[in-house]
Figure 1 (tube, helix red, strand yellow):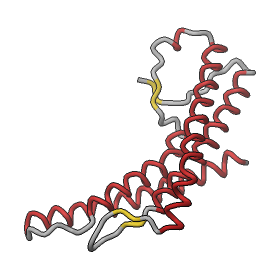
Figure 2: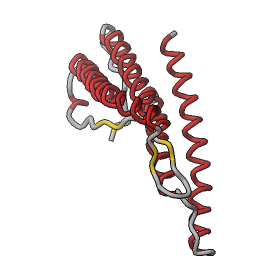
Figure 3: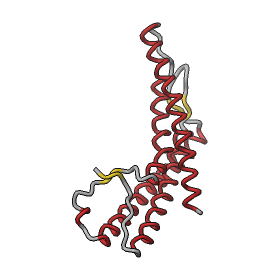
Figure 4: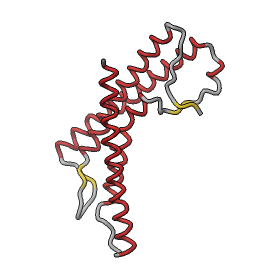
Length: 171
């Protein structure tokens, strides 16, 4: 039940991030055309692009985790017994939980500050508010914690059957 809900949320955020990336293409093309053809770039393009890239990355993080899109190297672990590989998968899930929990915890004050003070990036014609960026970091990292927790629980259940779940793309 929780897994299906998290899966649906991850796909919805993936679609949102994809739409944002698609729209960002028009901003960049408009900036390049304006710069080359009219010697007048779009104002605020660097601020929009840098903010959008952070939003896109964090909105896609939970989908990448749940769809086994995170890369791992298994040159050594492929030769380990199933129980040890399962234990290593659980350990890697807990490391992911710790990493994203620290990002989440460290981003709370930044989001509150950006929201309360109206923090922005850029000067002049376009001032990009930073609270949506910081909110995306909070949402993405919080959901990433939930995704890694779900993967750890699934791996522990699979380990009881002497199975190892694949948690990333092998290279």
